[in-house]
Length: 231
Image (tube, rainbow, N blue to C red; front, side, top):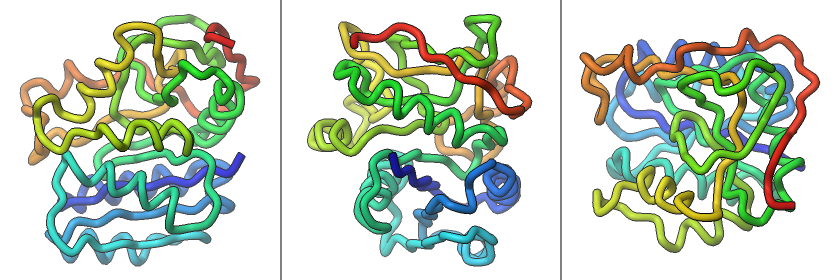
């Protein structure tokens, strides 16, 4: 299964630098396409993306400001359409770092849950460790927007109903989809962390600590095991 990473980028180079470094430390990234979907707001961020030392890299500059409601959609579309035949796209953010085993986690989960028709995708952010074993992946009737991914056939269903406003916002829309039978696969311990305390679109600084993952995996290699699901 071929994976690609698409990272949304706006105007905070101080966070973007840390994000790029975290992805550079991910095992397997040298063989994975990394796409930067860049807003036309910061020359410094654009330059950081251009200079990022990934083997397989594509930097796409938006002609107009897409914003937090549309740029994830554009990034996901780019992942599936701009770098060849990709099966699963991971959408990262310019203020969310990942662990060195992030690709191993997504790759394993993408393979294991692909035939589970009610699984809409894979999330890497787990606010509270739900299980003690760091290698477990399991279904949750929940959605977390901090570095997530989905398959081409799920995206073909989701994108037609993607909301570009707050009625509801796209993350709430995906969360609403999980209120019955559908679900996302989650790690027992988070493989990503949000670092964007200041100047974000939706993050009040006073809520930053509350909304962080309480524990993040150290990124050491794991023998992953997927439990639960509908297949």
